[in-house]
Image 1: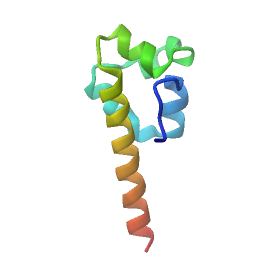
Image 2: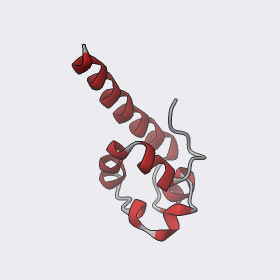
Image 3: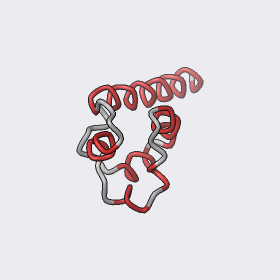
Image 4: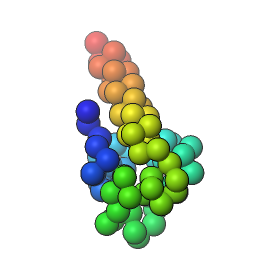
Length: 75
């Protein structure tokens, strides 16, 4: 698992920019907020009433899909 609920939201978005779509779909535009620099994925999910485990799963699914696509295109 690449992303965990204990990771900082800003860290996640910087390392995996493709996750922005997942955050937006979940109703969390907080990656652009100054609080995201200090807030974990779990804290953000809780503040927005989102199931943190489902969010982390979705974040990791998109990262895995993008990485698989990159590998496939590199061959």
